Image (cartoon, rainbow, N blue to C red; front, side, top):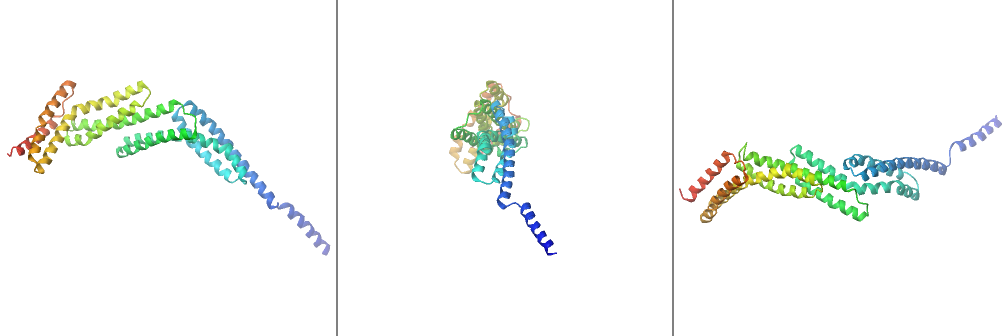
Length: 318
């Protein structure tokens, strides 16, 4: 029995030593597996990057946008996989081979993709009557455009195909025109089908402001044919609305000023300002005739005349 026990003990020890690797061997095996996974994911990233770069070279911003999220997601997977590899030099080598090229291409295009997505958000917002975000979003777009130029210069990146910027400027000009069309509609309706001179006055300044903005943005579009189409679709009708309404709006604002002067007890200044009203009325009629513009709704003319009559009575002490 003693011999048997000793033999068993002698057999157990070698088997245990063989079945359990030394800590250093286990770490090496684990590291090797993590390295293989990092290389596997890195090769997938390089394939995606190659497709992405070819798409960028073709200059189609919509197709670039479709591939962008997939590339950034795979980059994130690779960076996490590399982070699990032991050895700083090993990690740096993998990052240099896989992550760095992808990051450069992403940085080279990130602000163009961001511009496209923001412009899409602006158009969706307009469709959903969320006009209050338009100015903020357009200001953000301007910052993106400046940042895009700065990134290219600082990183020494190869310039993107001209068609990318052309398409973005087309989209920007269209968004500006689309926004303008709403204010054109509101002022036109408020002086025509649904007459309310106060509503027309409310929207008029935004109409003229967005008219100037739209013309400026259309001017940034290199495609002459597209510029012409946008001018005809958005700018031309807005200009007609401005021309046919501006002197009635001016009459209302002048009379509002006269009313404020009366309330302040400044009657002589109120009379001086009121005397300018006839000139605005004459100019309004002349503009309509010269431009062949449709007269404003009769209700608007009646409202302005009633306002004038009331102020005149007060100024004459009646």
